Image 1: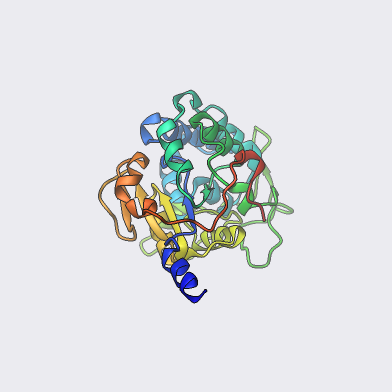
Image 2: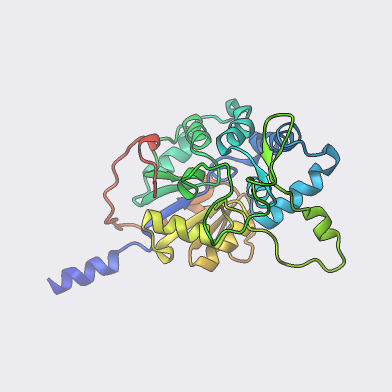
Length: 301
């Protein structure tokens, strides 16, 4: 019995779970979805929030850089909008027809004897649609998405004492021509135009990558040990945040490793060549994996 226990310990695989980003990771940037999504975000800011067109580029860059996503930044500086409406506008007109079934990737995923999860900042409607177009909807145990990390779809200021939010919708509401509301807006462009801008910015109620708190929250929800989880991402800052949390990391989209990446793949199709240890002979995973449709297996809090 002691010998059998030692043998099982030696044979235990290095990883328990493979955690995958979705967009520009499971499919290439060349599909054009990222470009259209970026334009849709800019259109939303103009049409729904009434932001001046000549400020969009600078504002978008500052929000993305400082808050992780433009959406999180917009909420952080004081804009108040419905999350579902935002996602519907931004993802509703994406060229999903550019995503084609990927039998090569499907075969790779189904032959990996590990837990496999999606971890995306996007909403679940987009995630399910993209996975379905790729033919990968039954390759994952579940999806950790925007709704998982932000379970309360609340358009007003959060009541949590730990969340700081500029303005109060009770006293400072402004209504745009499209019906959206906003509280007093923090001038982030003017803030960074100062000679020595303060490092302190208003906090956002939205939880998303590359926040280490968001990654730790996702790991807690899915009951994952970071040191036994392999994290696949195209974003350098998400990779580096994952590494700080203790994850093993794979950068997808380049063969050149950046700081924080343990592996680098030009394409997710190069997975077997770049991380051969995932297919080490005679390794048997303790995880019993039953194929299910992802839409029925969302990881939720």
